Figure (tube, rainbow, N blue to C red):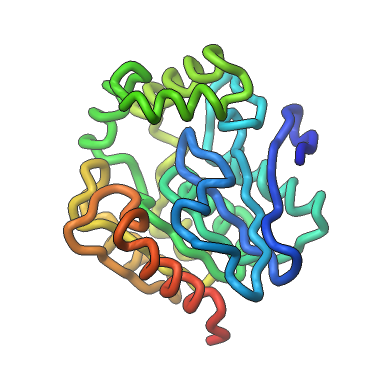
Length: 247
């Protein structure tokens, strides 16, 4: 499904016939359907809203300079369109950064959230990787998948690469101070691999120390996006248990 949001066409899908809305925000260059790489099916009691963020996947908006703060406002506009006042959410990497902005911009609207591989700021090691990021360096299966999923073809892919490079120089979008993190009202589960090449594990402790009512799960011997592969089933059980908890 598509809806006009803030001057661009946002693509989203709703998975599951009934239940409480569960927002899924995938990582940078990902799509709303990426939840299927982690969850075997839509968990009972939930209806997953999978969003292609601005400039990603089947959404348009691949122009200008990308900002996760704007993506947060975009998603709130989608929730308004759907008549959803309050939501639970899972955000992975870049999608988690957008979710973190959402929890700060309108704290009362995020009931509970799971942040996977989300930093309070970009450390230099991440910026080094962002500067060197290129489409050509990706494995062929990933390049093929991007070509299939990006509605704007080569122009969109080039924009995604360019924006990744710009992230390495950005100083005012992914900067979450203790003061801003203290505004968060959502129950929060922070999930981090202890061998993440982008974000050292100490950043997870920084987030947990500053976000009220937060818990931390460090996944041993796992890198960025530690919820895939052998840990997918455990993540599904842990995340849904956390999100359904009423405490």
